[in-house]
Image (cartoon, rainbow over all chains, first blue to last red; front, side, top):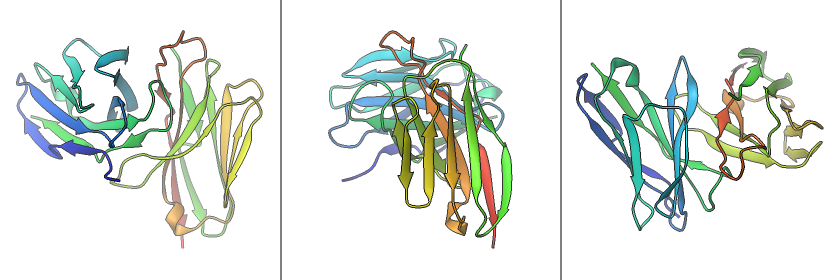
Length: 113
Length: 114
């Protein structure tokens, strides 16, 4: 079974731009969660989607948004990028909603200059 | 908000020595999970504990969930160089009302000296 895939793997953007990251979960998994990982703040929960509905949201500003499609693929968007948004963005999929065994993708390394 | 602290932050051990990391939450957790992240890699699920006082073993790894469901530990016996990585605990608060907001612990970075 193929694992969680994320595209792109690396991205360099300029402050003020916007970015869209993509995540394809493991086949059959309907829950997709997004996390931001930085050396200073560690792993922080962004949001969770299940069956195209946002079930949970972490404490991030409205510039961070996401969506999930009917095939469970998910996208995350960050608008008006700031230098502090530089991070590894991880997507994780799970068979059921809520926080259960999660399978992480390799992440997208975003650098904002 | 919920805080999950792990101690120690870093640990260097000689290969063959034992290692323990402790996870402490400011709130009661409905369940706790442990993940391992190798350098340059992504978190990999190790185990989930649900019941108060639960103990689970995976070969050289022993996981415990505290009686109050606010703390947990991971113990590795006779460490090997393959154990190198950062170990995270994570869990949703038990009063999350069905919507489970997850907090990851601060992580313990393990270095094994051959």
